[in-house]
Length: 262
Image 1: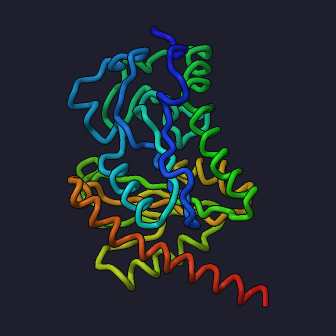
Image 2: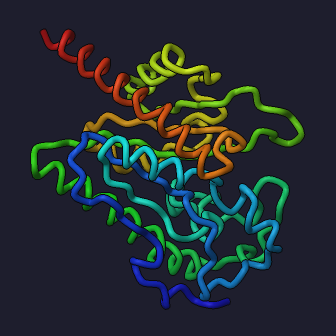
């Protein structure tokens, strides 16, 4: 198996709008379905590499739209989640899965401990170091960021249609997630649910737990059904819809906290 030593940090993570002055910091861990040369195709067909198992379709366009409207930096992955799922810790089987949904991933079968370490060092560590650096810069400036991770999900799961259109997920602190759900239900026509189609129990809040919770940062994970953001125009429209929701949710959260402190 090819090694990951050829990869450089800029091959696995991009930071856009680093000087943005808004309160939010946008993260897109599953932005890309790129398979860099050290890994080839992992034995997958072109159709599999385009499918949801390899990335979150539409998520990057939505994340960029939100970053532009919220004057926020964006930290995004540049490699497929099948090489390393950046929303999973290194000891998780899901970080480099041998099977995803109903698909076997031949290039991930039988990985040794050394293989897993090489991918962790090449992909996971640079990505999360870049995100931590953006957080740390804002903390040093006295502007603690609000962490928003952006994902998409399939409209059908194992043959069952999903009615939810907009899922809002929290880790330990539900404050911003609850406010986001309330704002979305008030301000949009999206069918919005809390902790759907996933929750922290499904091991999907690793980035929030690693990067936001230790600093006491407000945070939320957004999941949008990918048929609603399949085209660039739809991604822009969804960003236009959700940016005011996030502003309103943050305002409500800050108001609630001020009231509690008083």
